[in-house]
Image 1 (cartoon, rainbow, N blue to C red):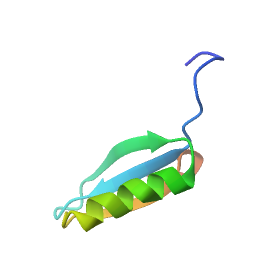
Image 2: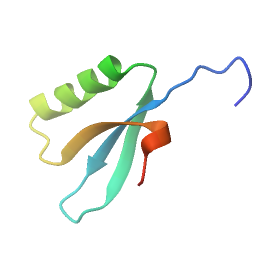
Image 3: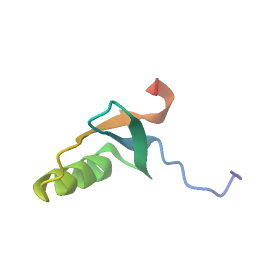
Length: 59
């Protein structure tokens, strides 16, 4: 990442039925990430989705 790269501190995380966690995407704002989560949940995806700040990730 160079000085001109955008900062994308908000991650959307997905957890499947087996407890495996995956980063779905990275976003500039929490609102943007939450919109993605809402869209996935509205489409009937049954996995668990949530938003985390990159510096607080423990995955």
